[in-house]
Figure 1 (cartoon, rainbow, N blue to C red):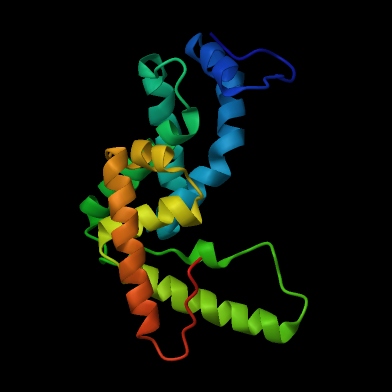
Figure 2: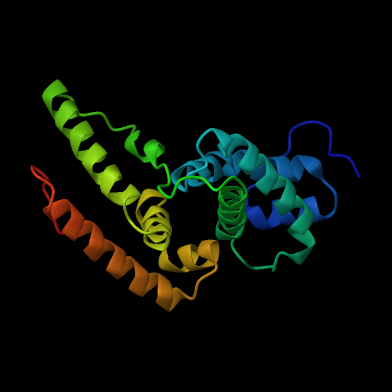
Length: 194
């Protein structure tokens, strides 16, 4: 069934999913429009680099094909991000990329300090932080990326990574301890409890 002519007015994911399951491509287009930026940011933060666009496109194609298996009442966001995570892992396996995942998009913030000196200092602190995150082991980097750069809850992180929620909690704690230790050992690094 083709999409409906004209604009599609869908307010929630559940309606879009139901309509897309029925073959309404415009309804699925609403989901694509709603989650493309997040899916792209996820792919880049997990190391997709220049391949992020392709991975996101593949993730949406897979999501569309898997819609019949999507559990009603579940959240679409972590389900889609799990597909993006798997696409990214698969791409890494295929190309055997370097161990460090690129998180350069995390350094781009919309909030720019008013003072140019503050801007330079903030950029330096972000660079130190991103270097420390890149140096973490893969699983630690993934959990930190999901929890803090993508701002996912523990439950959403667990679903996106396919881990038990208790593992997310303990892995986050260990990853933050490693990150804190790494930052403390760097000259000029400032570490807060936040």
